[in-house]
Image (cartoon, rainbow, N blue to C red; front, side, top):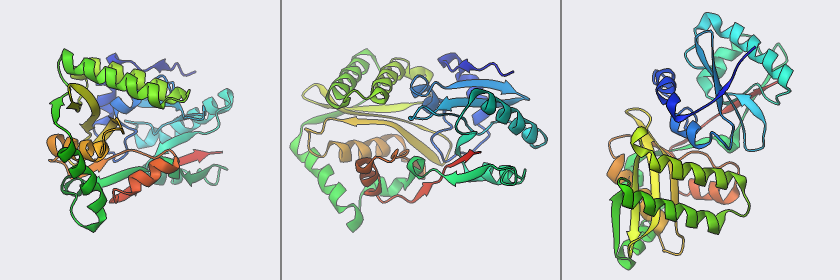
Length: 299
């Protein structure tokens, strides 16, 4: 019997110990990502045979396991059998989601396809990876439109950029998040949970390995962004919100945040598009270096 418990801020060090040895390109295997979506996706965990087992549900409400972390290869088959039994008992739709290609090869070696399990790509959850230098410079024909939007913002507005730190800026970001929610929620529970998580993490920002900036115009926060370095080569942008009434605000904060906080890494992960047409179009418009694939295993 597995006894899963809900993830809390107090679990950060435990998760970091298991996640750190891996060099994930995916945003999923970040404590901050898991914490942001802990309520929306009911993120839970258990330690089994020395491995960290994470269980959560997707935005359609289907529970699944993530890739086990810290396992020994000689225990992987037993772990898989144990999770399959749990899946059957609980009526879960999937056994695994959010899997990277390396783990897929290890699972294939166990003969899962011969056991009736099937593996498929999860396109809606592919992560978008970009070259940092290109997002900062916005040079060339491919970025001409983005550069124009950026220039429009800096020419039209008397702005100030501040680090998300200190009571005044944090409160300003919370007000901006609440305003963004009121204008965009459309009774969407995911946006409700995300907004609540944003307010939580900015109030506890010193306990996360996060960097953040807020963009002010006339003493009001009109945009903010939060991200972190996952390793020496890659940073992930967890949150980016802006008031679209300010022309070019998204091009401005995208470029400025990366330039100020993550110019020392090669790759920026801007997470997935969730199959949302407008979001996919926007992410593709920044000319990604590659899409980091994720996979589902079911049976």
